[in-house]
Length: 258
Ligand code: GLN
Image 1 (cartoon, rainbow, N blue to C red):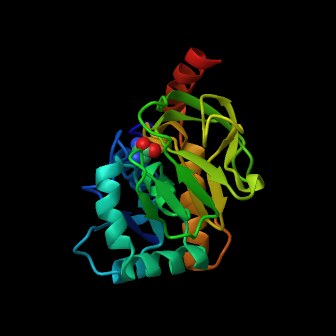
Image 2 (cartoon, rainbow, N blue to C red; image 1 turned 180 degrees about the vertical axis):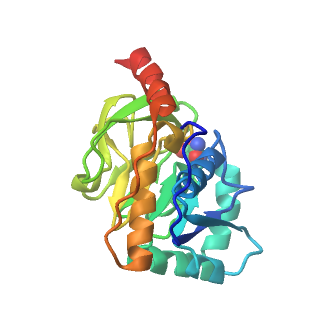
Image 3 (tube, rainbow, N blue to C red; image 1 turned 90 degrees about the horizontal axis):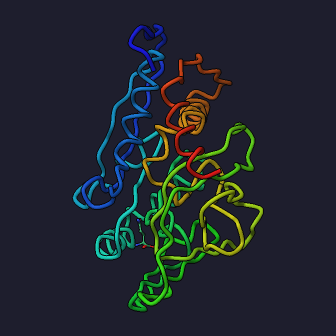
């Protein structure tokens, strides 16, 4: 993105609900919020970022047009998991079922499944909105760590997604055809079946940290498009931006791997 790009005067507005910014934000996940905000603002779209923490009312979820939750380690996951077992979790499920777009990374992705079994064998119930479950086989097994490239399997994404993964949990989808993509390099959901992530309605779950959106502007734009289309009930075509810096970042990761 270059500074010469001027915002276009249109009157769209988006509220991005950022779930648990203090607890669920490892490996630079806040970079995803910055990318969503900037790519919208560069097109003249007004953005409000609403942090949604333990103390925040579930109503904040209702007024969000786009949702984001990053990853965390097991300890933070347990705290957030308790909070989500209450009203906030119910409202989050409703929003996802209604088709409110969202991006859920790693620990957040695991939460939305049926359960997550931690390394010390605690079974944390998930929200059960994504048809998947996750098992962490324990310290004796290697964590799945490294750069990753996947080939997305969904409409609107034509370029490989690149990122970095670091998880002990192995996720198994009930229906493999709901995967976000096929692993080309790296581990993905479980290191075995070559699937990575999930797409459920307008929500995306993935293990790609890094953060994912600065290196994958196509996914950022897809999320913004879905959020605007859902909110305004019309077909949206976002103005193209200069992605040359993002392209270089992607190429650097890809060169290391492929
Ligand atoms: N605690 C989870 C795991 O290790 C999630 C890790 C993360 O979000 N980085 O599988």
